[in-house]
Length: 277
Image 1 (cartoon, rainbow, N blue to C red):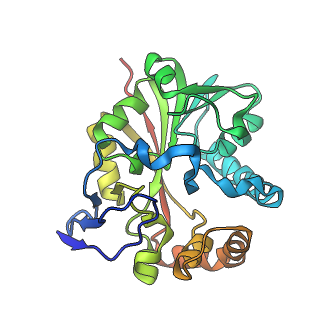
Image 2 (cartoon, one colour):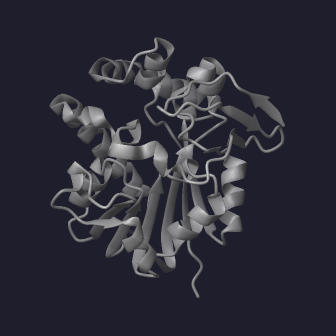
């Protein structure tokens, strides 16, 4: 086990931050533990809710990027079914684009806020309490960059799986702690995102967690998620804005090539199936 405290605190909460990483499986954990992480997300002000999309150009760029991501995801997903839940939908922008791409599927986003994010006004939304009442009602449940946000991975997976029907498809995507950029950029790498990210998964540790939850892993994919812009904003101590978004777009081919050559991409996506009863 290795330990480091030289990380950037990206929250407004003053607390020491330490990351401990297993030398065997590569999995890393943020310390100290936080029994309730909701205090980190008040007013939807963190980058998980993409406050910069109030800028119309930023929103249009991200719409274009999400449309490309959705097309790729739908090629990987055997079938979305009639009902799809985007668990932990954040800003809701990806959920909206996904819904627009699946006109014959009931697509609903969920989060722990009582009101939907602006992107889902007029669209389907459920609170975390609503989702907790659902049991075996969705053909597909997605949790895109959600699992890393809670200290209790086992309990969070149980919440994600509960609304899924027996035999439903489960899509999990998380940052890859063994990404090539963790070594290049160190503490400035955007996907550390401390203290918001509580667990930092390797391919091995993610597979172990999903298998331990009883899921049948069908396929795993390495995903180049855009992180360059925010990483350079971190290096220069600046807040993310349209300039850094543009820089990330310019550097995206470099990011993609580095991950292709190294075989260690920014994120890991798993398509799994909930066991049939």
